[in-house]
Length: 141
Ligand SMILES: [Cu+2]
Image (cartoon, rainbow, N blue to C red; front, side, top):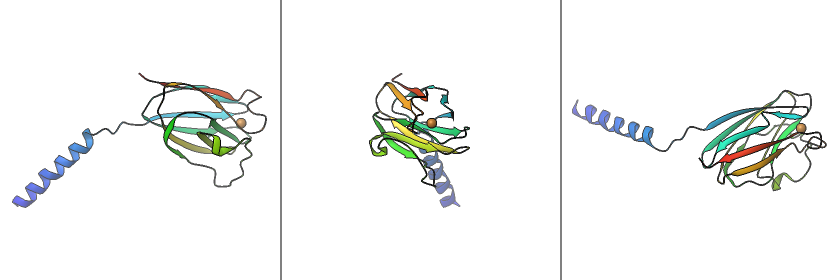
């Protein structure tokens, strides 16, 4: 009986310790992609905190979300499984990149480590020229 009480006390200690630790809830933003724009076209996120972008392609064509150069860590992109991505440029040179087929939804998680304003664009042939660009603003608070 005493053991059970001690075990319970220790368990509660651990639970409260976990709850109080630095688990910052992720900033979650949903972006719609269509021909040929992002909605919203400007998104603001905090520096050094986890961000989860949900990218919904409500258009009839494939689109992607690219930030060519941005200091980031913990990048996780859920890509299309088909591999039918007709992007231009070199994906390895993009710090952030996720593609979404028509009517698809993918997510992109990351932590931006430097405040600033970064350009978003769609790397599918002709889309950037057609106006498919946006801005990612990282604030230092
Ligand atoms: Cu596009």
